[in-house]
Image 1: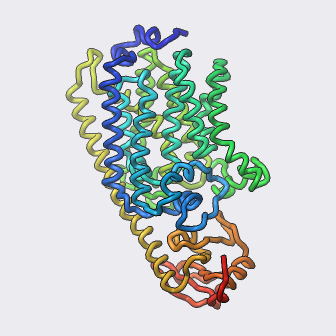
Image 2: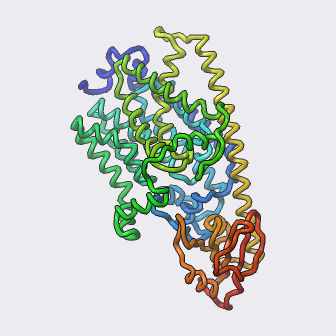
Image 3: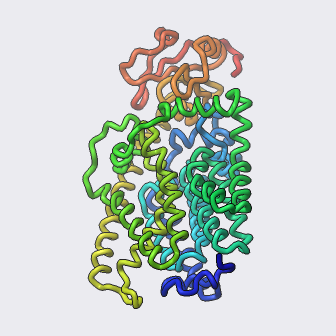
Length: 498
């Protein structure tokens, strides 16, 4: 194998000439990537709106380090990466706007840094185009300013895979080895199981090609990020196998489940499709989903012809394994699950697109460029429409939680307090209460514990309007809230404490 960057590029073709590290790339390439990252941050702030309240999963993560409400139940599949991510803001401020701005800026910076990890592998314009393709997906923009793990797994995947390819092609690139470790640690800290799926091809390749240094970096990164999850498994669940089994149960018992159609239907803006019984959206919403694999395959053909197979094949392999469990092993869908796969596919797809619109001599093909431009404009219009509707819908649900919390305060349910039942976790957070559930995915309290709490603090049982309440709450006074009912226990004894 050739050592160093320049020998690797000899005879690789006209576009690889731009891969040589030097001042022109640093000045022009870095500027392009910085511009893409800045626009990504700006679009988040303009289109998603920093005033958007916290969602259900966000409440769970933020409450672990926030001061507004007691920590919500933290179920087996979750990891502590997001609480660490939001800690610099949530630990001292209750401002959702400030948290959104912080995450938008941080995600824009992360996009810039992880794209730079590929700078010795693809021309600047390809990386900038890849950033545009990934950053303008409605699901990327929607989750950019949110306290959720999947986009950060995607950033970690881009960093880890890009640095892995660099280190494999140039064994003197020590920075790339550290990048592999950092990317693996970021993924594993956010979602350990996703990190394993993303890095599976890399682990296989290190063993097959005996890249022991890269293998050690990968293993160390996964261990550094996942050690807290493993320790917590033994402390709270009785062992790693037990936690994995519990996580599988919560996710609907992982096994062969064809969820491709569920993911397709969720592209209309359904952030959690469980059960996914909504109609298939119009073809304009999901046509890009079928174009991307075709472009990725064409990009691989171009790479093979250009003698640079590894830098395209490896991210495609990692994208495939990242998507596999969410397409074939889980019985429901959420668009955010596939963000790591979309991020890894973006670079080969962008490379393929430039191959289509430019001739071998470097000149633009006017007809193909015009068609591609029109297709891109249509794609962006659809993405904006889906994003706008998704933001409006989610904003409405979170406003309902806030109104319900305000009404509970008016009814005397104030901290310290306890809410159980339907949507108890988000409503309790907005009200500043503890939340509890007697069963299901978030089961963490018994009927006896609820009755005992009712003797000391205000307790409310939330239900869907008209739904039969639990036995212990049937005699409690009924009050309608915004989209739900609450039955409030008789006033506790004076001087009670949580």
